Length: 73
Image (tube, helix red, strand yellow):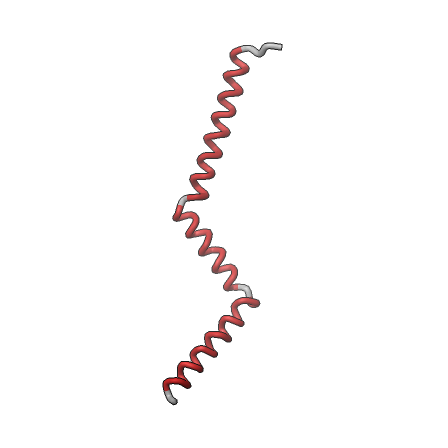
């Protein structure tokens, strides 16, 4: 069954529009500013988690204590 020209043109237009949306989305996802912003948001969320936050504070206190001990020895 043959399709008419208008149907084929409409399908091509829909495919072109979908491809344009996909390209715009890929461009947005790979934009260095957007990647950096998403990374910062992820890092902030991870560091705000008490399971990560308090052990990091403990390690920081330990490092400071060792440095102070080494200075005054």
